[in-house]
Image (cartoon, rainbow, N blue to C red; front, side, top):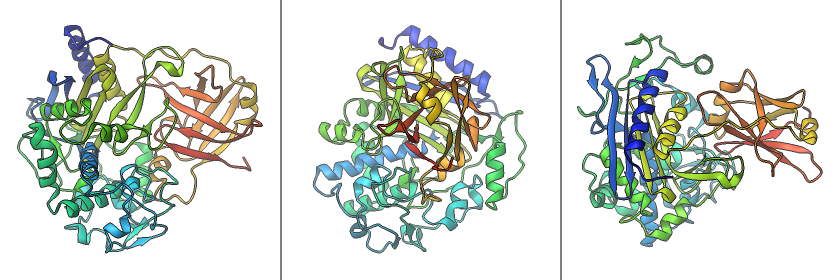
Amino acid sequence: MATFDAAAASRVRDAAAEILARYHVPGISIGVVEGNELVFSEGFGLADIESGEPMQPERRQRIASITKTMVGLCAMALVDEGKLSLDGRVVELLPEVTFHGPAEGMTVRHLLSHTSGIGEAPTRERLADAANPDRAAVNTPGDFSTLYPNGIVVEVEPGSKWAYCNNGYGLLGEIIVRAEDASLQEVMQRRIWGPLGMTSTDILDQNDERITTCYHRPPNEDNRFQLERAGVVVKDEPTVDGHNIRGKFTADFNQGMRAAGGVQSTVPDMGKYASALLRGGARIVRAETFEAMTASHRGDDGRMVSWGLSIARTPLRVSGERPAAWRTLLGHGGAYFGGWNSHLDVLPEANIGIVQHLNIMMDEPAPVFRRIVRAVLGIEDAPYAEGSTDPGLLAAAPGMYELPMPGPLTNFRPQTRIGRVNVERDGDALVLRSRWGKWKEGVRLTPCDPDDPGFFAIQLPDADPAYVAFDRTPDGRVTGLRLDELATMHRRPDA
C-alpha cells in the first residue's frame, strides 16, 4: 500500500462523487492522516440541503460512539497512573447502583470490552426508548443519579457473552468522573483534546451553529414493523429532496450517558486524534497500554470482527483468498438518531488514518465507509470464486440457528437486525435465510478459505463480503455458527 499521493486523492474524490450519486447522501467530509500530517481534508455534497450550503470538513459533527474510544483512553490513562484497575469491581466503584443479576464479578475490563452482561437497555421496560428514533419522545433524566431508578439488569455472567453496551459506558464515564473528581469535559480536555491541540471538540452535547444539518431516511419495512410492535409511534415524514428527511438536534445524552456518544468534533480535529492513535496513543497513554487496548479481548478469528478495550478490530481483505491476505483496521463507528454517521479507521502498518463524517443516519453505512477506505488505500476486493462446499457440511449444516438465551437485552441488536437463521441445502451449495434484514430472501454461502471448509463468504452487490463460520465437533457435527460483530448462534437440536 503506497503513500497517499495525488492519485490517491483523485481516487477518493471519485469515490465520494460515486457515493453522492448512488446513495443520495446529503454530504460527506473526509480526512486522511499520514503519520502526523493531515494530507487530505475535503467536503463533498451539502451540509444543508435546503440552503445549498456546501459540506466542509471544518463543520461540526456528532461523532456518537467514536466517543467510546476517547473514554477508553481516559480510563486506561488512569490505569497507567494506578488510579484505576482493570479488575476493579463495578459494584464497589458505583455502590449506589442496583444491579439485578450476576453483577458481583463485573469489572472495568468488562465495561471496556462490552462483556459486562448488560444489554441494549438497563431493563426490558426501557428497550422501546433505546430503539425509538424520535429522540424528542424519549424522557431523558438529568444526571447519573437519576439515570437508573429501577436499577440495571445483568442478563448473563460478565465475561460470558459479547453485547454492545451503551449503558456500560455510562457506568464507565461515571467511574472516570469520580476517579478524577472532575467532569468528563474537563477530563477529556486535559487528557486528550488539549495535548493534541483539538480546539473544536467537546462533550457538552449542545447545539452549535457550526454543526451540520442532520438527515435520515424513512424506517425500512422490518424496522417499522418492529417499532410498531413495540408500541413506538412511527411518523410519516416528508423528504426534502425525494430521499432525505430533515432531522433536528436533540440533546439526547444526559450528563450520565455522554460517555457513550456525546462528543462533537470536526475532520481536522479528528485527524489529530487519528494521528495520536497511529503513534500508539502518544501523549495520552503508554505505548504498551495502547497495545493492550488494541489487542483482541473478544474474538480470536482474524477474518472476522473482534474487539479490544473500547476499540473495534475490523478485518480488511486486501487480495487473494487466504487468511494471510487480511489486515486489521483499528477504530470505531458512530451513528446518531436524527441523524449522523461517522467512522474512524487507522491502519498502523500503512501509517494511515481515515476520518469520515456523513450528515445522515443510514441503515447500512458500511458500504459507504468501506468504499472510501479502499480508495484511500488503493486496494480492490475481488469477489470470491465459486467453490465446492464440503460434502460433510452439506449434510450437517442445514437447520435452524438461534441466538443464545437469556437474551432480550444482550441479543437485541442481532435479534432485530438478523433474527433467527435458517440454513438450507440448495444442490451442492448452502443458502442462509435470516428472519430480518438483507439476508431474509436467502443468500448463497461461498466457501472462501481452502484451509477451513467451515468458513464462508456472503457476497452482495455494493458491499464487502460478510462472513459465516460454522462451529463443529471433532466428529463433524455442526453445533452453531458465528457471524461478524461477534454474534454466535446455536443450532437447534430439533432442526
